[in-house]
Length: 217
Length: 266
Image 1: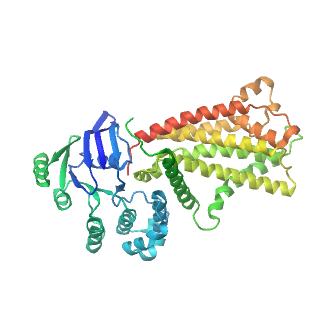
Image 2 (image 1 turned 60 degrees about the horizontal axis):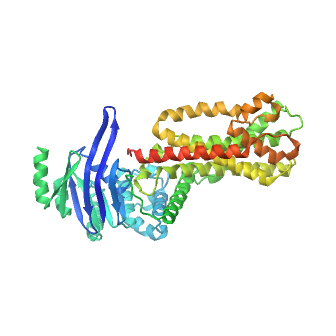
Image 3 (image 1 turned 120 degrees about the horizontal axis):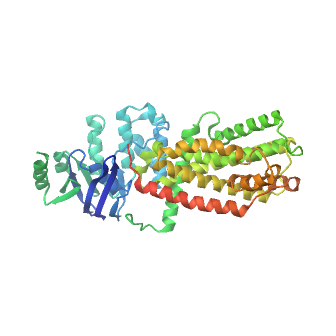
């Protein structure tokens, strides 16, 4: 189970400290799929960074009883001068996963061919996104964090990703943040709305959606 | 405490070793590539520096001590400069280019610094050893008289470099100013670091002041091990150890605070 208790996060700005998250309580148990709706700048990505453990909260507590992924398909950690394969090797080392067992999957899934052995610098943005997604799937987690679902590559590849994540791994927990209520409706069982640094829980995705609509207007 | 650790110590240690190992491989391949000399650059680079300085000093005929072999003097002196200077310089602003890596929870700010410190210490050590072996086998340098003392001095100098690196690295995460201040500081410390002189050559009143500089104690100790009774050295290993310990504690504090406050911007 993942448990956030009274999590606060403030960032210093030129005009004093700005409160981004103001007392967040959240519980996600194994296999649960939750969506978090919020407008641009509501603090969704900050919340994801707190849950993933990349940044620490200013106060409050975060417990991770299950393994939690890094934000899905995040490609910002690629070393440009290393090949796709080297980057894969690095991720495997970090997570203590056998590199050799992962290569066939990455080769097959990314369809990068000889480019897997070329520096990431030479990749198109689509190729980069494919590699990033493949790496997210190469390491197994109990809970996946998704910071907006962005279309990866062409429609065929996109559906391949969707199958890999929502079909093959449908037993996993999921935390999806988005400003798009339809995406959350399609993938989550329950939903929260993030406004002014606070989370409000709703019984159904529809109720959250209605509340979000009133907030947006 | 805003962050609760329930990972047992041994498990944490295991993760840290794994992460630093992965970062080391990544840094080596990125920095030196797979082509031509590859990772050999790790020590060829500092070796070329030391070679250059040795040639320069020998050419100019820097021989205050007259009896002191210039090659051994340059190798011991410049190698120790590389040790403390490179560690700190490489740790200044080590975070921005590696920011994205922090998305992987097990990669912490401290790991980025440990990686760079290990690489610099390894490079400087290999260059020191390889150069010594070459000069000794060519007959241009005598073997060290007390190898254990050399080793001890080297370890202390490396520790001093590492502790400085934590201060400079952790400090530069709080303010870029630290990085800017570090570069002139390193230059200013070079002439008084003991690399180019022996404390014994200095007037007594000046000696006392010089021994407050930790690098001087380190180099003197190293030369004591190298030359033995051929030279008179002045140093305090206890003082150097104390400095290392204090600066390490302060540095770790800075790094911890940097890790707590970091904002990942990618």
